[in-house]
Figure 1 (cartoon, rainbow, N blue to C red):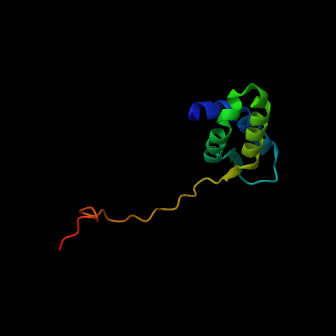
Figure 2 (cartoon, rainbow, N blue to C red):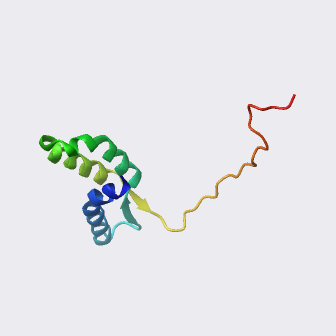
Figure 3 (cartoon, rainbow, N blue to C red):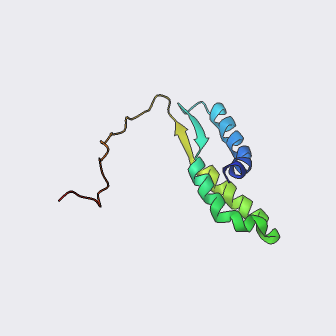
Length: 95
């Protein structure tokens, strides 16, 4: 499913990269949000197989992917809070 999503999103991804490189007013580059692209692909999957709805489904996919671009900020890693593992399942509590 993800490879099919990558095939459909590739032209849009190239367009976003080109626009990001040409636009000198922005500080960082942009990329598409793959999570929303995969979610949208699941929504339009039936429309892709119906001949009468193929064009509408691909246009809807392209519109959603173009609207959900995100900024790539290098070096922005927030450490996650690590919780200790529980020694037993909570259903089996000691008496």
